[in-house]
Image 1: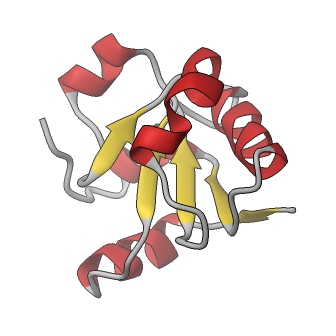
Image 2: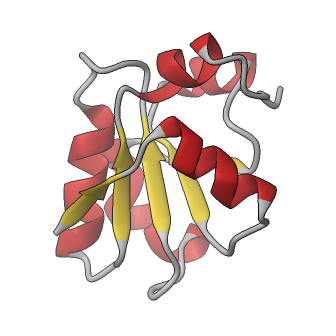
Length: 107
């Protein structure tokens, strides 16, 4: 089961330095322009081949993409669940929402 998470909860987790992995499911070029702090870039097409090198089972994983209309975060989250990762959270409305709230980004 994929859980939902909102911007303020994710921001709180970052501020608390909660152990988690943040996955940016956007195009790598978008990631390079700016991303949520501590996020790693992982495309849906790369999940099966790269998940083991980036992710740990049992640690919360938060996935986001461009905006609420972009399906990438949901697709990656579902794929991670099918591979046995949990808990997995989908932050949707995603990066556009994060930026609109004035939360920090990393370049």
